Image 1 (tube, helix red, strand yellow):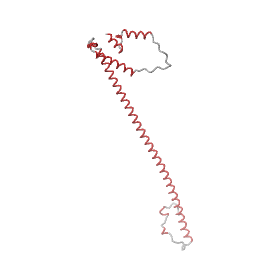
Image 2 (image 1 turned 45 degrees about the vertical axis):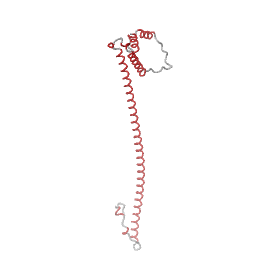
Image 3 (image 1 turned 60 degrees about the horizontal axis):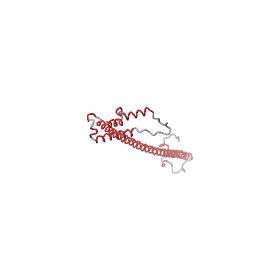
Image 4 (image 1 turned 180 degrees about the horizontal axis):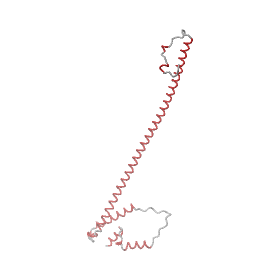
Length: 200
């Protein structure tokens, strides 16, 4: 029997085979034997092929399962990184918002301080009103204090290192300091303006 025959033609029903070969001649019995042997070989080959396919399927299924677990782990890591990044961004936004509020408060305080100084130095209020109303003196001193504190907070110099050379005060700096004390009206810094107003 040729191996190119379809599977349906290769195998016959069991009822088509003789129940016994005692009544068959040697040629017919040999033909039945060869057909049974060919069917057995084909069945064994099909069984081995099915077993190999089953093993390949299990191996592929195991690999796919490992890939799914790895992808799930990657998705979990991405979700965790996403949450951490969102939390970090929120912390940055919160810090910037707090810094903006702090700067706004300092600017408002500085604006109020300079406004108080402008009111005290306004010629329309009268020269002697400064001494006539002591509370205005305290307002002025509070305004000057606010300005000085603001500048200390915003423009604080870094501490000097041991390797820095000693600073030598020149005669020009001494002369400038003496002139600021003697003629404060010639300078526009808050300390000189305060001395100028007190000298009046």
